[in-house]
Image 1 (tube, rainbow, N blue to C red):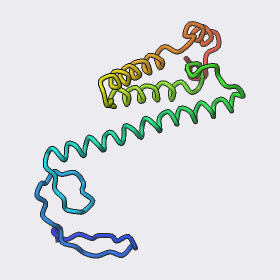
Image 2: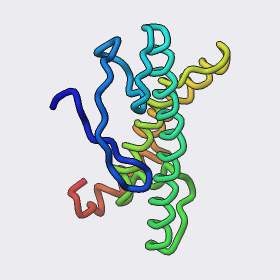
Image 3: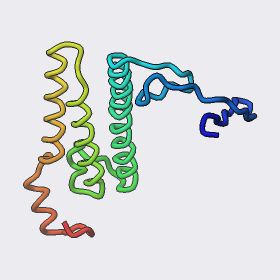
Image 4: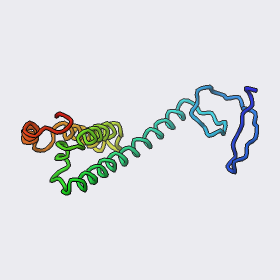
Length: 153
């Protein structure tokens, strides 16, 4: 029974099919096509999939940050003067986490040329810098010392 498995068709019906022996036990998922890849093809495919996920993260993380800051602005009734100003409010954890994740994606993403690669690495470094040292840090710390937030900071 181990050499037979159930296959689901697009219309929802099922049928039994014999498993094809694989030429390589450790190959990338091939969609049931039984295609084997050599090491170079496998490495290229893994790199392509990784870059697809990094690209999606570079779209979704700023979108998440935009949605959270917009909802916070609607709740507070005012828009902050800069994105770093959200560091002092209830969005701090999401803000710092999203910027760190964006920075990691920018550094991991390899540019087409050397100049683009350096620019992406620099942008990743500055994203971490913005996450750790927001605008008006001294005034923000003074304000938090005078009026502590509910989380104790």
